[in-house]
Length: 124
Image (tube, rainbow, N blue to C red):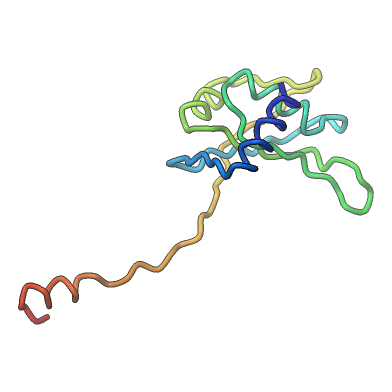
């Protein structure tokens, strides 16, 4: 249930709890009916597993849905289950689901090879 999840998420956030995921588990959902909001999206995908977050994208000027959104699941296994299902229907409308190509920031790794060789007494 969406409202119960929002409450649990707020409580977890208040105590600093976090859920970590090994791989990006975000889905791109397109062809949403104009009247589908976050709660509808949440309720549909929660039957496949734990939904971490979801958003329906709206036009800032008109306030109307842009007919696509994003769903983030708890883990990749749940995402794989969703992608295996070929026919997704929300509010009598077929929607299209694909894995979102999330681009995570690349962090610079320190060059530890020179430190390791110096510790061994080898020079590069």
